[in-house]
Image (cartoon, rainbow, N blue to C red; front, top):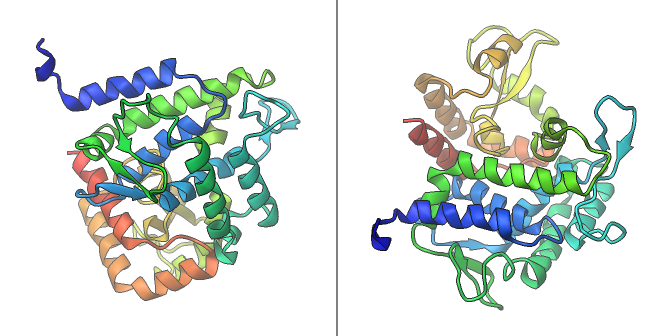
Length: 318
């Protein structure tokens, strides 16, 4: 096959795969940067050409928030702090910053958002991105994802990168999460279950969204978002409308309350078009109230990003 006939998207995928396989890693920063770019790609407008470093830094905090919590060893009544740096007795700076933010916030991401600590720590993480991450990810002189020069407060995505990250989002996230999990597993000899470890590293932090259950039930007039059935005490579940397995989008506009049966029924599947339309109507008509709920509970309210994620998810599903 002629070199100029190779699909640029597949060429980029090949570069990412080689990066995950062959690059040297003293910390998990490269995994986090790749994952952050993938996550952000589905929240950004189609014509996006740059991403602010502050946005990437905040996504780092969200990615590492679960990971700095103690990990319960499978089938054992023992918790351990996972090592995510080649030097066991010297945790990476970003990990230390997230640990400190979590400690000051009572381990609650919602509290960290509500008190403004996230913003303060985002600035510190951004400094580490500049110092130790952005220039390391790509081979020197051969960028394939973005261009960044010292002094700039954003990265410039190369042509076609955003579209490729969106098109192959699920595949890329699976590759990155798998490589990240194996890296952590190799440096933590007590960890023997990749399934349990992967869930710990990349699962949804349910505690962060429990506080919005009652306000959302009231907004839904006490009925299941999907079935319209009455929500009884003990039978209400907070559900990510666009499943967490498809996109790590925990903004309030993506959260609804449903019955346990509805939650099981839809699980990781996309909901019918009528429910998608219903969500968009809710987010438009109740935007002021939803913004208020988000502020009061320290959650993100970003209807533009929620709409972009929804459009991407349904377009990808055909």
